[in-house]
Image (cartoon, rainbow, N blue to C red; front, top):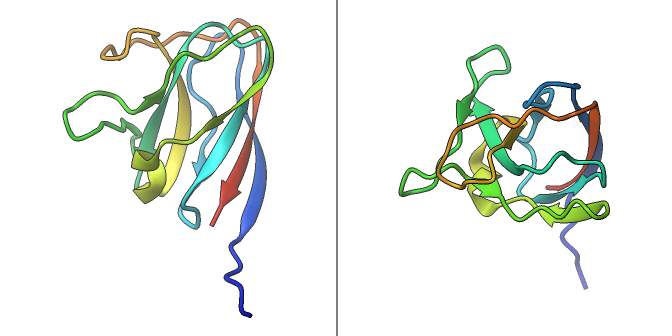
Length: 123
């Protein structure tokens, strides 16, 4: 029996206090993953900003009808894992974006203190 071995990776990324975007992470070698949102998360959805190069301007990732791709209904009563949406799988450089809980909007929701989010990525 043969097995397909897929790369796993762990990363800790931060959204600074009073900010809405995380530091950049390289998603280019991965095709899936999860993010652990801490229990002290300031109520917000998680959207995604992407770029071809880490030095480029990061733009909002949108679905096929123009709505920002996001993880919504994040519960703040405890830390929880959320699946990264499949629309993200073609991206190279990514930033997590703390955004309004209104799905179609592009408004930042700044985090009240520094937030550390854990990523488990699968190749």
